[in-house]
Length: 136
Image (cartoon, rainbow, N blue to C red; front, top):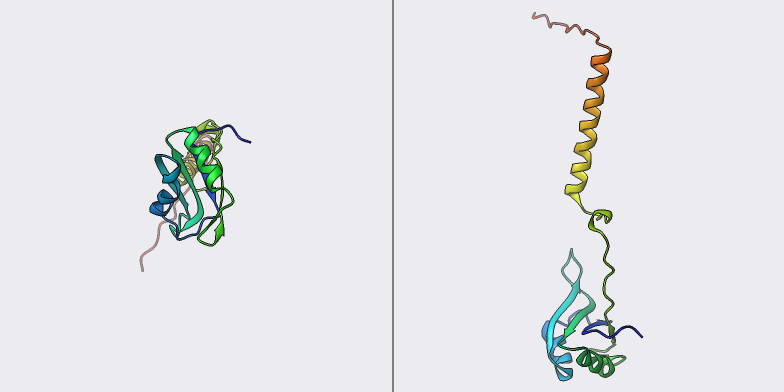
């Protein structure tokens, strides 16, 4: 069993269950501080899971005991304590869709290439003749 905290994780929810539906499920067990439904970013549709923050760990325990393995909207929901995220240093985490980060890396690479090419030109100067276009 996990360390008791005031946040509850609920999974296998109906995709149609909204905040008000979750509120009506959890209100009999105590005061609710926050509800976070996990949604698909591209379609904004529910993924069938949510986090509900109760006012105390005792309320969270009551909710887990009362709702775990019950049938809600024709589905057997699973309710348990939410596990806190491990803290990781931000600079070591690389996000998949970090376009500004990729742009910065690309610019840095291009600047390094430019500096390297300029250094090569200065160390080995070659004069280039530009061919003039003849007008007919």
